[in-house]
Length: 45
Length: 549
Image (cartoon, rainbow over all chains, first blue to last red; front, side, top):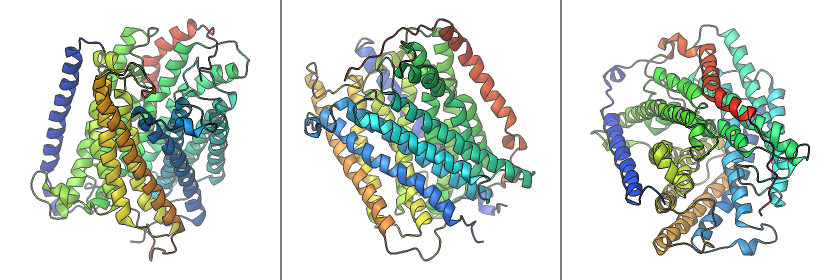
Protein backbone atom coordinates (compact mmCIF):
# COMPACT_ATOMS: atom_id res chain seq x y z
CA UNK A 1 0.00 0.00 0.00
CA UNK A 2 1.31 3.45 -0.88
CA UNK A 3 2.45 5.51 2.09
CA UNK A 4 0.84 8.92 2.21
CA UNK A 5 3.33 11.53 3.34
CA UNK A 6 2.42 14.89 4.80
CA UNK A 7 4.43 16.55 2.06
CA UNK A 8 2.33 14.70 -0.54
CA UNK A 9 -0.78 16.28 1.00
CA UNK A 10 0.83 19.68 0.78
CA UNK A 11 2.10 19.21 -2.76
CA UNK A 12 0.46 21.60 -5.18
CA UNK A 13 1.56 21.20 -8.80
CA UNK A 14 1.93 24.91 -9.51
CA UNK A 15 4.88 24.30 -11.82
CA UNK A 16 2.73 21.89 -13.81
CA UNK A 17 0.14 24.59 -14.33
CA UNK A 18 2.92 26.87 -15.57
CA UNK A 19 4.21 24.22 -17.98
CA UNK A 20 0.75 23.44 -19.34
CA UNK A 21 -0.08 27.14 -19.69
CA UNK A 22 3.05 27.58 -21.80
CA UNK A 23 2.02 24.52 -23.80
CA UNK A 24 -1.47 25.82 -24.52
CA UNK A 25 -0.15 29.27 -25.53
CA UNK A 26 2.42 27.59 -27.80
CA UNK A 27 -0.27 25.36 -29.27
CA UNK A 28 -2.51 28.30 -30.11
CA UNK A 29 0.41 30.31 -31.53
CA UNK A 30 1.67 27.49 -33.74
CA UNK A 31 -1.78 26.46 -34.94
CA UNK A 32 -2.65 30.07 -35.78
CA UNK A 33 0.69 30.56 -37.54
CA UNK A 34 0.13 27.46 -39.69
CA UNK A 35 -3.39 28.61 -40.48
CA UNK A 36 -2.27 32.13 -41.43
CA UNK A 37 0.56 30.83 -43.61
CA UNK A 38 -1.87 28.65 -45.51
CA UNK A 39 -4.46 31.43 -45.83
CA UNK A 40 -1.75 33.81 -47.07
CA UNK A 41 -0.94 31.27 -49.76
CA UNK A 42 -4.55 31.28 -50.85
CA UNK A 43 -5.64 28.10 -49.10
CA UNK A 44 -3.84 25.93 -51.57
CA UNK A 45 -0.28 24.90 -52.23
CA UNK B 1 11.50 -4.74 0.43
CA UNK B 2 12.97 -7.15 -2.12
CA UNK B 3 11.49 -6.75 -5.57
CA UNK B 4 9.71 -9.56 -7.43
CA UNK B 5 12.17 -11.81 -9.25
CA UNK B 6 11.66 -12.82 -12.86
CA UNK B 7 13.05 -16.22 -13.77
CA UNK B 8 16.02 -16.52 -16.12
CA UNK B 9 13.70 -18.00 -18.76
CA UNK B 10 11.33 -15.04 -18.50
CA UNK B 11 14.22 -12.60 -18.81
CA UNK B 12 15.50 -14.44 -21.89
CA UNK B 13 12.04 -14.41 -23.43
CA UNK B 14 11.64 -10.66 -22.93
CA UNK B 15 15.24 -10.15 -24.06
CA UNK B 16 14.47 -12.01 -27.31
CA UNK B 17 11.84 -9.38 -28.10
CA UNK B 18 14.38 -6.66 -27.39
CA UNK B 19 16.95 -8.35 -29.64
CA UNK B 20 14.63 -8.56 -32.67
CA UNK B 21 13.42 -5.00 -32.02
CA UNK B 22 16.93 -3.55 -31.90
CA UNK B 23 18.06 -5.51 -34.98
CA UNK B 24 15.07 -4.11 -36.87
CA UNK B 25 15.88 -0.60 -35.65
CA UNK B 26 19.51 -1.04 -36.70
CA UNK B 27 18.69 -2.05 -40.29
CA UNK B 28 15.71 0.29 -40.66
CA UNK B 29 17.64 3.27 -39.33
CA UNK B 30 20.36 2.82 -41.95
CA UNK B 31 17.80 3.85 -44.54
CA UNK B 32 16.29 6.83 -42.69
CA UNK B 33 19.32 9.05 -43.23
CA UNK B 34 19.48 7.90 -46.86
CA UNK B 35 16.04 9.45 -47.44
CA UNK B 36 17.16 12.64 -45.73
CA UNK B 37 20.42 12.76 -47.70
CA UNK B 38 18.52 12.25 -50.93
CA UNK B 39 16.38 15.29 -50.11
CA UNK B 40 19.56 17.32 -49.60
CA UNK B 41 20.85 16.23 -52.99
CA UNK B 42 23.31 13.65 -51.67
CA UNK B 43 21.86 10.56 -53.32
CA UNK B 44 23.63 7.39 -52.20
CA UNK B 45 21.06 5.01 -53.66
CA UNK B 46 22.90 4.49 -56.98
CA UNK B 47 25.83 3.10 -54.94
CA UNK B 48 23.59 0.53 -53.23
CA UNK B 49 22.62 -1.25 -56.44
CA UNK B 50 22.04 -4.13 -57.00
CA UNK B 51 21.12 -4.71 -53.32
CA UNK B 52 18.75 -1.78 -52.95
CA UNK B 53 17.29 -0.69 -56.23
CA UNK B 54 15.45 2.52 -55.47
CA UNK B 55 14.59 5.31 -53.05
CA UNK B 56 11.19 3.69 -52.56
CA UNK B 57 12.65 0.31 -51.68
CA UNK B 58 14.78 2.04 -49.05
CA UNK B 59 11.73 3.94 -47.78
CA UNK B 60 9.81 0.66 -47.49
CA UNK B 61 12.62 -0.96 -45.48
CA UNK B 62 12.80 2.12 -43.23
CA UNK B 63 9.05 2.30 -42.65
CA UNK B 64 8.34 -1.40 -42.17
CA UNK B 65 11.31 -2.12 -39.90
CA UNK B 66 11.17 1.04 -37.81
CA UNK B 67 7.47 1.81 -37.62
CA UNK B 68 6.16 -1.77 -37.50
CA UNK B 69 8.83 -4.26 -36.42
CA UNK B 70 10.94 -2.27 -33.94
CA UNK B 71 7.83 -0.96 -32.20
CA UNK B 72 5.77 -4.16 -32.14
CA UNK B 73 8.57 -6.37 -30.79
CA UNK B 74 9.71 -3.83 -28.22
CA UNK B 75 6.14 -3.26 -27.08
CA UNK B 76 5.24 -6.94 -26.77
CA UNK B 77 8.41 -7.54 -24.75
CA UNK B 78 7.79 -4.54 -22.50
CA UNK B 79 4.11 -5.41 -21.96
CA UNK B 80 5.09 -8.98 -21.06
CA UNK B 81 7.61 -7.66 -18.54
CA UNK B 82 5.05 -5.27 -17.02
CA UNK B 83 2.39 -7.95 -16.65
CA UNK B 84 4.76 -10.42 -14.98
CA UNK B 85 6.46 -7.86 -12.76
CA UNK B 86 3.30 -5.89 -12.03
CA UNK B 87 1.15 -8.90 -11.12
CA UNK B 88 4.08 -10.60 -9.40
CA UNK B 89 3.35 -13.93 -11.01
CA UNK B 90 4.65 -15.93 -13.97
CA UNK B 91 2.78 -16.19 -17.25
CA UNK B 92 -0.18 -18.54 -17.03
CA UNK B 93 0.74 -20.32 -20.25
CA UNK B 94 4.29 -19.39 -21.32
CA UNK B 95 4.14 -21.76 -24.28
CA UNK B 96 1.31 -19.72 -25.76
CA UNK B 97 3.39 -16.55 -25.49
CA UNK B 98 6.34 -18.31 -27.08
CA UNK B 99 4.15 -19.49 -29.97
CA UNK B 100 3.04 -15.88 -30.44
CA UNK B 101 6.61 -14.62 -30.42
CA UNK B 102 7.81 -17.16 -33.00
CA UNK B 103 4.81 -16.47 -35.24
CA UNK B 104 5.91 -12.84 -35.21
CA UNK B 105 9.50 -13.79 -36.05
CA UNK B 106 8.41 -16.02 -38.94
CA UNK B 107 6.17 -13.17 -40.11
CA UNK B 108 9.03 -10.67 -40.11
CA UNK B 109 11.25 -13.02 -42.12
CA UNK B 110 8.41 -13.74 -44.55
CA UNK B 111 7.80 -10.01 -45.11
CA UNK B 112 11.49 -9.11 -45.23
CA UNK B 113 12.41 -11.49 -48.07
CA UNK B 114 10.15 -9.87 -50.71
CA UNK B 115 11.04 -6.40 -49.45
CA UNK B 116 14.76 -7.08 -49.88
CA UNK B 117 14.11 -8.78 -53.22
CA UNK B 118 12.34 -5.61 -54.40
CA UNK B 119 9.08 -7.53 -54.70
CA UNK B 120 7.21 -5.49 -52.09
CA UNK B 121 8.17 -1.85 -52.58
CA UNK B 122 4.79 -0.66 -51.35
CA UNK B 123 5.86 1.44 -48.32
CA UNK B 124 4.67 0.64 -44.81
CA UNK B 125 1.10 1.66 -45.64
CA UNK B 126 0.97 -0.95 -48.48
CA UNK B 127 -1.93 0.88 -50.17
CA UNK B 128 -3.38 -1.03 -53.13
CA UNK B 129 -3.41 -0.91 -56.09
CA UNK B 130 0.35 -1.13 -55.45
CA UNK B 131 0.76 -4.88 -55.38
CA UNK B 132 3.37 -6.76 -53.37
CA UNK B 133 4.40 -10.40 -53.40
CA UNK B 134 2.00 -12.59 -51.38
CA UNK B 135 4.75 -13.46 -48.87
CA UNK B 136 4.79 -9.80 -47.74
CA UNK B 137 1.08 -9.84 -46.86
CA UNK B 138 1.37 -13.27 -45.27
CA UNK B 139 4.30 -12.03 -43.17
CA UNK B 140 2.37 -9.00 -41.94
CA UNK B 141 -0.56 -11.26 -41.06
CA UNK B 142 1.68 -13.54 -39.03
CA UNK B 143 3.17 -10.58 -37.14
CA UNK B 144 -0.33 -9.39 -36.22
CA UNK B 145 -1.62 -12.87 -35.34
CA UNK B 146 1.52 -13.55 -33.28
CA UNK B 147 0.99 -10.35 -31.32
CA UNK B 148 -2.65 -11.37 -30.74
CA UNK B 149 -1.53 -14.74 -29.39
CA UNK B 150 0.94 -13.06 -27.07
CA UNK B 151 -1.87 -10.76 -25.96
CA UNK B 152 -4.10 -13.78 -25.19
CA UNK B 153 -1.29 -15.12 -23.04
CA UNK B 154 -1.24 -11.85 -21.09
CA UNK B 155 -5.05 -11.88 -20.65
CA UNK B 156 -4.94 -15.47 -19.37
CA UNK B 157 -2.26 -14.44 -16.89
CA UNK B 158 -4.42 -11.57 -15.73
CA UNK B 159 -7.46 -13.84 -15.36
CA UNK B 160 -5.42 -16.22 -13.19
CA UNK B 161 -4.18 -13.31 -11.07
CA UNK B 162 -7.69 -11.91 -10.72
CA UNK B 163 -8.95 -15.28 -9.47
CA UNK B 164 -6.37 -15.17 -6.70
CA UNK B 165 -6.79 -11.46 -5.98
CA UNK B 166 -10.48 -10.78 -6.35
CA UNK B 167 -10.51 -7.51 -4.42
CA UNK B 168 -7.15 -6.08 -5.38
CA UNK B 169 -6.68 -3.16 -7.78
CA UNK B 170 -4.70 -4.23 -10.84
CA UNK B 171 -1.19 -2.78 -10.39
CA UNK B 172 -0.88 0.15 -12.77
CA UNK B 173 1.96 -1.07 -15.00
CA UNK B 174 0.09 -4.34 -15.58
CA UNK B 175 -3.20 -2.51 -16.02
CA UNK B 176 -1.78 -0.13 -18.64
CA UNK B 177 -0.13 -3.02 -20.47
CA UNK B 178 -3.33 -5.05 -20.61
CA UNK B 179 -5.31 -2.06 -21.92
CA UNK B 180 -2.65 -1.59 -24.60
CA UNK B 181 -2.84 -5.26 -25.60
CA UNK B 182 -6.64 -5.04 -25.71
CA UNK B 183 -6.56 -1.90 -27.85
CA UNK B 184 -4.30 -3.78 -30.28
CA UNK B 185 -6.71 -6.73 -30.48
CA UNK B 186 -9.58 -4.42 -31.41
CA UNK B 187 -7.85 -2.09 -33.82
CA UNK B 188 -5.93 -4.67 -35.84
CA UNK B 189 -9.23 -6.17 -37.02
CA UNK B 190 -9.06 -3.57 -39.80
CA UNK B 191 -5.79 -4.71 -41.39
CA UNK B 192 -6.64 -8.35 -40.68
CA UNK B 193 -9.81 -8.05 -42.76
CA UNK B 194 -8.02 -5.98 -45.41
CA UNK B 195 -5.26 -8.54 -45.90
CA UNK B 196 -7.27 -11.73 -45.51
CA UNK B 197 -10.26 -10.74 -47.66
CA UNK B 198 -8.51 -8.67 -50.31
CA UNK B 199 -4.75 -8.30 -50.46
CA UNK B 200 -3.64 -11.88 -49.82
CA UNK B 201 -6.13 -13.57 -52.20
CA UNK B 202 -5.42 -10.84 -54.77
CA UNK B 203 -1.66 -11.34 -54.55
CA UNK B 204 -2.18 -15.11 -54.90
CA UNK B 205 -4.28 -14.58 -58.02
CA UNK B 206 -7.47 -15.89 -56.40
CA UNK B 207 -9.33 -12.64 -57.11
CA UNK B 208 -8.86 -10.33 -60.09
CA UNK B 209 -8.74 -6.93 -58.44
CA UNK B 210 -9.16 -4.86 -55.29
CA UNK B 211 -11.20 -1.92 -54.09
CA UNK B 212 -8.58 0.67 -53.05
CA UNK B 213 -11.07 2.89 -51.22
CA UNK B 214 -12.34 0.06 -49.04
CA UNK B 215 -8.77 -1.11 -48.45
CA UNK B 216 -7.71 2.35 -47.28
CA UNK B 217 -10.66 2.48 -44.91
CA UNK B 218 -9.74 -0.90 -43.42
CA UNK B 219 -6.13 0.26 -43.16
CA UNK B 220 -6.95 3.46 -41.24
CA UNK B 221 -9.28 1.52 -38.94
CA UNK B 222 -5.97 0.14 -37.67
CA UNK B 223 -3.64 2.94 -38.70
CA UNK B 224 -4.54 5.62 -36.20
CA UNK B 225 -5.02 3.45 -33.10
CA UNK B 226 -1.66 1.99 -34.08
CA UNK B 227 -0.30 5.34 -32.92
CA UNK B 228 -1.78 4.70 -29.46
CA UNK B 229 -0.45 1.15 -29.47
CA UNK B 230 2.96 2.80 -29.88
CA UNK B 231 2.31 5.57 -27.39
CA UNK B 232 0.62 3.82 -24.47
CA UNK B 233 3.70 1.75 -23.49
CA UNK B 234 5.69 5.01 -23.44
CA UNK B 235 2.92 6.53 -21.31
CA UNK B 236 3.14 3.59 -18.88
CA UNK B 237 6.78 4.44 -18.39
CA UNK B 238 6.16 8.20 -18.17
CA UNK B 239 3.35 7.74 -15.65
CA UNK B 240 4.70 5.03 -13.42
CA UNK B 241 8.45 4.69 -13.92
CA UNK B 242 9.97 7.99 -14.98
CA UNK B 243 8.95 9.93 -11.82
CA UNK B 244 10.81 7.40 -9.69
CA UNK B 245 13.90 7.56 -11.92
CA UNK B 246 13.80 11.34 -12.21
CA UNK B 247 14.06 11.99 -8.47
CA UNK B 248 12.15 9.46 -6.41
CA UNK B 249 8.85 11.12 -7.28
CA UNK B 250 5.40 9.59 -6.96
CA UNK B 251 2.65 9.21 -9.53
CA UNK B 252 0.42 12.23 -8.96
CA UNK B 253 -2.90 10.53 -9.61
CA UNK B 254 -3.46 6.82 -10.10
CA UNK B 255 -7.16 7.53 -10.76
CA UNK B 256 -6.51 10.03 -13.56
CA UNK B 257 -3.96 7.71 -15.13
CA UNK B 258 -6.40 4.79 -15.24
CA UNK B 259 -9.22 6.95 -16.56
CA UNK B 260 -6.95 8.29 -19.32
CA UNK B 261 -6.08 4.75 -20.43
CA UNK B 262 -9.74 3.75 -20.60
CA UNK B 263 -10.62 6.83 -22.64
CA UNK B 264 -7.76 6.02 -25.01
CA UNK B 265 -9.20 2.52 -25.41
CA UNK B 266 -12.68 3.83 -26.18
CA UNK B 267 -11.72 6.74 -28.43
CA UNK B 268 -8.64 5.65 -30.30
CA UNK B 269 -10.22 3.37 -32.91
CA UNK B 270 -13.36 5.21 -34.12
CA UNK B 271 -11.51 8.17 -35.60
CA UNK B 272 -9.48 6.72 -38.46
CA UNK B 273 -11.37 8.68 -41.13
CA UNK B 274 -9.41 11.79 -40.18
CA UNK B 275 -6.66 10.18 -42.25
CA UNK B 276 -9.07 10.10 -45.19
CA UNK B 277 -10.27 13.70 -45.35
CA UNK B 278 -9.07 13.86 -48.97
CA UNK B 279 -10.68 10.55 -49.96
CA UNK B 280 -13.64 11.13 -52.28
CA UNK B 281 -15.45 7.90 -51.39
CA UNK B 282 -16.05 8.72 -47.72
CA UNK B 283 -19.07 10.68 -46.56
CA UNK B 284 -18.30 14.20 -45.24
CA UNK B 285 -20.67 13.55 -42.33
CA UNK B 286 -18.55 10.67 -41.06
CA UNK B 287 -15.38 12.64 -41.71
CA UNK B 288 -16.80 15.38 -39.47
CA UNK B 289 -17.79 12.91 -36.72
CA UNK B 290 -14.36 11.29 -36.81
CA UNK B 291 -12.71 14.71 -36.65
CA UNK B 292 -14.70 15.54 -33.50
CA UNK B 293 -13.68 12.23 -31.91
CA UNK B 294 -10.09 12.99 -32.86
CA UNK B 295 -10.29 16.22 -30.90
CA UNK B 296 -11.87 14.15 -28.11
CA UNK B 297 -8.56 12.32 -27.71
CA UNK B 298 -7.04 15.67 -26.77
CA UNK B 299 -8.67 15.26 -23.32
CA UNK B 300 -6.96 12.03 -22.20
CA UNK B 301 -3.81 13.43 -23.80
CA UNK B 302 -4.01 16.53 -21.61
CA UNK B 303 -4.86 14.38 -18.57
CA UNK B 304 -1.69 12.45 -19.32
CA UNK B 305 0.35 15.62 -19.77
CA UNK B 306 -0.96 17.00 -16.44
CA UNK B 307 -0.39 13.84 -14.42
CA UNK B 308 3.04 13.08 -15.88
CA UNK B 309 4.34 16.65 -15.48
CA UNK B 310 2.90 16.84 -11.94
CA UNK B 311 4.62 13.57 -11.04
CA UNK B 312 7.89 14.90 -12.45
CA UNK B 313 7.40 18.14 -10.55
CA UNK B 314 6.97 16.09 -7.37
CA UNK B 315 10.32 14.44 -8.16
CA UNK B 316 11.98 17.77 -8.93
CA UNK B 317 10.76 19.39 -5.72
CA UNK B 318 11.93 16.37 -3.72
CA UNK B 319 15.38 17.06 -5.11
CA UNK B 320 15.21 20.67 -3.89
CA UNK B 321 13.69 22.28 -6.97
CA UNK B 322 11.99 25.64 -6.49
CA UNK B 323 10.04 28.12 -8.57
CA UNK B 324 7.59 27.63 -11.37
CA UNK B 325 10.04 25.92 -13.73
CA UNK B 326 13.43 25.63 -11.98
CA UNK B 327 12.47 22.18 -10.58
CA UNK B 328 12.96 20.82 -14.11
CA UNK B 329 16.71 21.36 -13.76
CA UNK B 330 16.75 19.27 -10.57
CA UNK B 331 15.50 16.14 -12.33
CA UNK B 332 18.02 13.37 -12.74
CA UNK B 333 19.24 14.42 -16.19
CA UNK B 334 22.51 12.52 -15.77
CA UNK B 335 20.62 9.20 -15.95
CA UNK B 336 20.43 8.29 -19.67
CA UNK B 337 17.07 6.62 -19.23
CA UNK B 338 15.66 9.82 -17.70
CA UNK B 339 17.31 12.19 -20.18
CA UNK B 340 16.06 10.17 -23.17
CA UNK B 341 12.48 10.06 -21.90
CA UNK B 342 12.35 13.71 -20.84
CA UNK B 343 13.71 14.84 -24.21
CA UNK B 344 11.25 12.51 -25.94
CA UNK B 345 8.44 14.10 -23.93
CA UNK B 346 9.52 17.65 -24.81
CA UNK B 347 9.51 16.98 -28.55
CA UNK B 348 6.30 14.99 -28.21
CA UNK B 349 4.59 18.17 -26.96
CA UNK B 350 5.32 19.72 -30.35
CA UNK B 351 4.26 16.53 -32.11
CA UNK B 352 0.90 16.87 -30.35
CA UNK B 353 0.51 20.42 -31.60
CA UNK B 354 1.23 19.34 -35.18
CA UNK B 355 -1.25 16.50 -34.69
CA UNK B 356 -4.01 18.96 -33.84
CA UNK B 357 -3.18 20.90 -37.01
CA UNK B 358 -3.43 17.68 -39.03
CA UNK B 359 -6.73 16.83 -37.39
CA UNK B 360 -8.24 20.19 -38.39
CA UNK B 361 -10.22 19.48 -41.55
CA UNK B 362 -9.46 22.60 -43.55
CA UNK B 363 -5.77 22.63 -42.62
CA UNK B 364 -5.45 18.92 -43.35
CA UNK B 365 -6.87 19.33 -46.85
CA UNK B 366 -3.88 21.48 -47.70
CA UNK B 367 -1.18 19.71 -45.70
CA UNK B 368 -2.17 16.08 -46.09
CA UNK B 369 0.17 15.05 -48.89
CA UNK B 370 3.07 17.27 -47.91
CA UNK B 371 6.34 16.82 -46.01
CA UNK B 372 4.53 18.25 -42.96
CA UNK B 373 3.15 14.77 -42.19
CA UNK B 374 6.49 12.87 -41.98
CA UNK B 375 7.80 15.89 -40.06
CA UNK B 376 4.93 15.34 -37.60
CA UNK B 377 5.28 11.60 -37.16
CA UNK B 378 9.01 11.83 -36.67
CA UNK B 379 8.21 13.90 -33.57
CA UNK B 380 5.65 11.36 -32.36
CA UNK B 381 6.65 7.81 -33.28
CA UNK B 382 10.32 8.50 -34.07
CA UNK B 383 10.92 10.56 -30.94
CA UNK B 384 8.07 10.50 -28.39
CA UNK B 385 7.89 6.73 -28.77
CA UNK B 386 11.29 5.63 -30.07
CA UNK B 387 13.43 7.83 -27.83
CA UNK B 388 11.31 6.73 -24.85
CA UNK B 389 11.84 3.07 -25.76
CA UNK B 390 15.55 3.79 -26.08
CA UNK B 391 15.42 5.32 -22.58
CA UNK B 392 13.57 2.28 -21.21
CA UNK B 393 16.14 -0.04 -22.78
CA UNK B 394 18.91 1.77 -20.86
CA UNK B 395 17.65 0.16 -17.65
CA UNK B 396 15.83 -2.84 -19.10
CA UNK B 397 18.85 -4.38 -20.85
CA UNK B 398 21.05 -4.24 -17.71
CA UNK B 399 18.12 -5.67 -15.74
CA UNK B 400 17.63 -8.56 -18.17
CA UNK B 401 21.30 -9.38 -18.70
CA UNK B 402 22.83 -8.43 -15.36
CA UNK B 403 25.44 -6.42 -17.33
CA UNK B 404 26.35 -2.86 -16.44
CA UNK B 405 25.24 -0.20 -18.91
CA UNK B 406 28.28 0.61 -21.04
CA UNK B 407 29.39 4.27 -20.79
CA UNK B 408 26.23 5.91 -19.41
CA UNK B 409 27.58 9.36 -20.35
CA UNK B 410 27.67 8.29 -23.98
CA UNK B 411 24.09 7.16 -23.61
CA UNK B 412 23.13 10.60 -22.26
CA UNK B 413 24.94 12.18 -25.21
CA UNK B 414 23.06 9.85 -27.57
CA UNK B 415 19.72 11.15 -26.30
CA UNK B 416 20.78 14.80 -26.69
CA UNK B 417 22.17 14.19 -30.19
CA UNK B 418 18.85 12.60 -31.19
CA UNK B 419 17.02 15.59 -29.71
CA UNK B 420 19.10 18.13 -31.67
CA UNK B 421 19.04 16.09 -34.90
CA UNK B 422 15.30 15.66 -34.73
CA UNK B 423 14.67 19.37 -34.09
CA UNK B 424 16.62 20.23 -37.25
CA UNK B 425 15.12 17.40 -39.34
CA UNK B 426 11.54 17.72 -38.22
CA UNK B 427 11.37 21.50 -38.23
CA UNK B 428 12.65 21.54 -41.82
CA UNK B 429 10.11 18.92 -42.88
CA UNK B 430 7.25 20.87 -41.29
CA UNK B 431 8.32 24.09 -43.02
CA UNK B 432 8.79 22.30 -46.34
CA UNK B 433 5.25 20.99 -46.00
CA UNK B 434 3.95 24.50 -45.43
CA UNK B 435 5.84 25.58 -48.54
CA UNK B 436 4.12 22.84 -50.52
CA UNK B 437 6.81 20.14 -50.73
CA UNK B 438 5.10 16.78 -51.33
CA UNK B 439 5.81 13.71 -49.22
CA UNK B 440 6.79 10.24 -50.46
CA UNK B 441 8.81 11.91 -53.21
CA UNK B 442 12.58 11.78 -53.88
CA UNK B 443 12.82 15.55 -53.87
CA UNK B 444 16.49 15.43 -54.78
CA UNK B 445 15.45 14.29 -58.25
CA UNK B 446 12.38 16.51 -58.62
CA UNK B 447 12.75 19.11 -61.39
CA UNK B 448 10.15 21.46 -59.88
CA UNK B 449 11.90 22.31 -56.60
CA UNK B 450 11.80 26.11 -56.10
CA UNK B 451 14.79 27.94 -54.67
CA UNK B 452 13.01 28.64 -51.36
CA UNK B 453 13.02 24.89 -50.53
CA UNK B 454 16.76 24.45 -50.94
CA UNK B 455 17.99 25.62 -47.53
CA UNK B 456 15.33 23.48 -45.81
CA UNK B 457 16.19 20.41 -47.89
CA UNK B 458 19.81 20.89 -46.86
CA UNK B 459 18.73 21.02 -43.21
CA UNK B 460 16.78 17.78 -43.68
CA UNK B 461 20.06 16.17 -44.73
CA UNK B 462 21.97 17.68 -41.80
CA UNK B 463 19.28 16.53 -39.34
CA UNK B 464 19.36 13.05 -40.86
CA UNK B 465 23.14 12.90 -40.47
CA UNK B 466 22.94 13.90 -36.80
CA UNK B 467 20.22 11.31 -36.19
CA UNK B 468 22.38 8.71 -37.90
CA UNK B 469 25.21 9.45 -35.45
CA UNK B 470 22.78 9.15 -32.55
CA UNK B 471 21.43 5.86 -33.87
CA UNK B 472 24.93 4.44 -34.23
CA UNK B 473 25.77 5.55 -30.72
CA UNK B 474 22.66 3.82 -29.36
CA UNK B 475 23.47 0.58 -31.13
CA UNK B 476 27.06 0.77 -29.86
CA UNK B 477 25.92 1.27 -26.27
CA UNK B 478 23.46 -1.63 -26.55
CA UNK B 479 25.99 -3.97 -28.16
CA UNK B 480 28.77 -3.10 -25.73
CA UNK B 481 26.39 -3.48 -22.79
CA UNK B 482 25.39 -6.95 -23.98
CA UNK B 483 29.09 -7.85 -24.32
CA UNK B 484 30.14 -6.05 -21.13
CA UNK B 485 32.18 -8.22 -18.77
CA UNK B 486 31.32 -5.92 -15.89
CA UNK B 487 28.20 -7.15 -14.18
CA UNK B 488 25.85 -5.30 -11.83
CA UNK B 489 26.51 -5.99 -8.15
CA UNK B 490 22.85 -6.29 -7.24
CA UNK B 491 19.88 -6.86 -9.50
CA UNK B 492 18.89 -3.62 -11.23
CA UNK B 493 15.99 -2.01 -9.45
CA UNK B 494 12.87 -1.82 -11.59
CA UNK B 495 11.77 1.82 -11.33
CA UNK B 496 8.14 1.70 -10.31
CA UNK B 497 6.82 4.87 -8.71
CA UNK B 498 4.30 4.68 -5.91
CA UNK B 499 1.06 6.57 -6.37
CA UNK B 500 0.47 9.50 -4.02
CA UNK B 501 -2.89 8.11 -3.14
CA UNK B 502 -3.32 4.43 -2.39
CA UNK B 503 -4.58 2.81 -5.64
CA UNK B 504 -7.06 0.85 -3.52
CA UNK B 505 -8.90 4.16 -3.10
CA UNK B 506 -9.35 4.57 -6.87
CA UNK B 507 -12.97 4.03 -7.92
CA UNK B 508 -13.72 0.37 -8.46
CA UNK B 509 -15.30 1.06 -11.88
CA UNK B 510 -11.85 1.97 -13.13
CA UNK B 511 -10.81 -1.63 -12.56
CA UNK B 512 -13.79 -3.22 -14.30
CA UNK B 513 -13.21 -4.26 -17.90
CA UNK B 514 -16.61 -5.13 -19.33
CA UNK B 515 -18.20 -1.64 -19.55
CA UNK B 516 -15.16 -0.15 -21.25
CA UNK B 517 -14.83 -3.01 -23.74
CA UNK B 518 -18.53 -2.87 -24.61
CA UNK B 519 -18.32 0.91 -24.87
CA UNK B 520 -15.31 0.74 -27.18
CA UNK B 521 -16.93 -1.87 -29.43
CA UNK B 522 -20.26 -0.04 -29.50
CA UNK B 523 -18.62 3.23 -30.53
CA UNK B 524 -16.68 1.44 -33.27
CA UNK B 525 -19.90 -0.09 -34.61
CA UNK B 526 -21.81 3.21 -34.46
CA UNK B 527 -19.08 5.37 -35.96
CA UNK B 528 -17.57 2.96 -38.49
CA UNK B 529 -20.55 0.69 -39.19
CA UNK B 530 -22.55 2.80 -41.67
CA UNK B 531 -19.47 3.86 -43.65
CA UNK B 532 -18.12 0.33 -43.85
CA UNK B 533 -21.56 -1.06 -44.71
CA UNK B 534 -21.83 1.42 -47.58
CA UNK B 535 -18.33 0.68 -48.87
CA UNK B 536 -18.77 -3.09 -48.63
CA UNK B 537 -22.22 -2.95 -50.27
CA UNK B 538 -20.75 -0.99 -53.17
CA UNK B 539 -17.47 -2.87 -53.20
CA UNK B 540 -15.88 -3.03 -56.63
CA UNK B 541 -13.01 -5.51 -56.81
CA UNK B 542 -11.97 -4.15 -60.15
CA UNK B 543 -8.65 -2.40 -59.70
CA UNK B 544 -5.75 -4.38 -61.15
CA UNK B 545 -2.42 -4.40 -59.35
CA UNK B 546 0.38 -2.04 -60.27
CA UNK B 547 4.09 -2.43 -59.94
CA UNK B 548 5.58 1.01 -60.40
CA UNK B 549 9.06 0.26 -59.16
